[in-house]
Amino acid sequence: MSLVALVPLVVGLVVAVVGLLGFLERLPRNRFGGVRTPATLRDDETFRVGNKVAGLPVAVGGWVGVVGGGVALLMTGAATVVVAAVALVGTLAIAAAGGVLGHRAAEAVPAPEPELPAGCKGCQCGGCDIAKSVGANVAGVGGE
Image 1: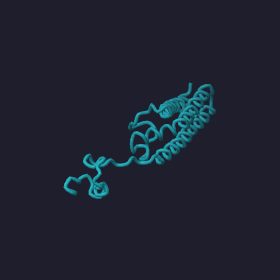
Image 2 (image 1 turned 120 degrees about the vertical axis):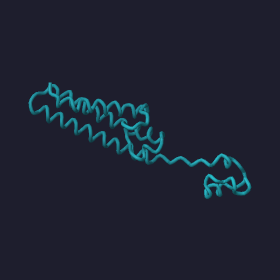
Image 3 (image 1 turned 60 degrees about the vertical axis):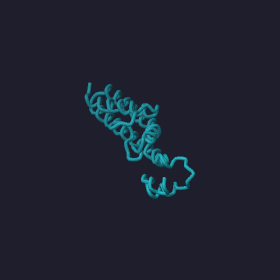
Image 4 (image 1 turned 180 degrees about the vertical axis):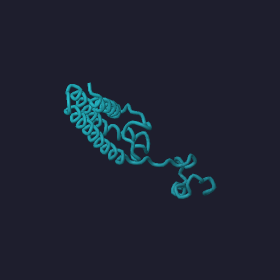
């Protein structure tokens, strides 16, 4: 058994699991796994959308590594290293392409509208434009 063949197998398995969790929307926002760009980390919704879109290509990339590593385990000689290297490069390339798709999907999610301070919600005073220009300190505006 060649240890070189285990690298794409193990890396592919981890990548496939992360991709599958992202596709199934079961991947929580975290510090380690999934598509982690400024766009996807904006909030929980963009992380979910970005990793759902990236999930299928990332999982496929992971399975390329698993299958390539499995084939390399069955081989002997220099061919083992070549097959393992091709499987690892394929895994990383496909996963990176999926990450780009996820990033673009997260960028397309509109930013949530900022909420007005509690004193301005639903009032008919017409001061909401003032609230946006003044900020959170609207208590002194118009005698409110």
